[in-house]
Length: 336
Image (tube, rainbow, N blue to C red; front, side, top):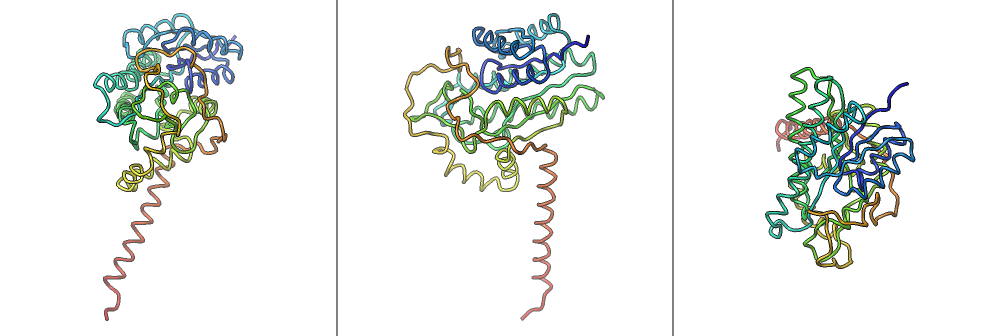
């Protein structure tokens, strides 16, 4: 009898991580190692995984704890079998202007969102490299390319893990490794992040731009695991943000200055002193979706970064060629 694929998902208790775990259970019947801080929430996800035909192993831990991440990988290998896919999704953020961020807040966002991902990659590689197979999927964001105001700490951490992965990718190619690594850059997604993230703003936070649902992201990540690519950009809005920053970064700075502060705030006042999940979990908010359910936008475009960049390059060449022709014509044409 063929054994089920083994998948590990960090940040699996809510939002995108929860959706990814359930998608692997429903579509692959996978055995899934579930990593997050809240055991109670993970137990709930485990029951959903098993109802969908998968098997679950609950691993409550903080991904900022390197030893705990490595121990979890060892336990998955012992109890479920060789890890086929490792998905790094765990993150925390703080909404606020850079001048208002406390040093411990910056440190915590970096430790979870950047170092937690790096530790997960190392733990996965320690097992996958010896077998010369396996896939690591890093959940990223368009914000790894184009930072926005009020989320500088998170944007910096996402950009850092992108740089880490680019370095690793070259090492794997150099070694002729069969381990694949893919980074999935996301658009705005309706998750509980906007209900439990720490905020220094006077009004409640919201995603900026077109908002997608976690279930769509979960299914897209399964597709990436089935056919790993270097990088995948999900949604036209993510592609526009990334390519727009390549083409006109100064314009993007000014556009976001004018639109992205108010664009990330609702009209509702923020409740000062409410619980947040930066250092501790928030009981009762571990669910897949946040409060931005309608209208429902579907992921109609799943574009690989390579294909999108090729299209952008071709457009850039055409633009430069056209400008060159006009300059040449102006210089060589008849003079009056």
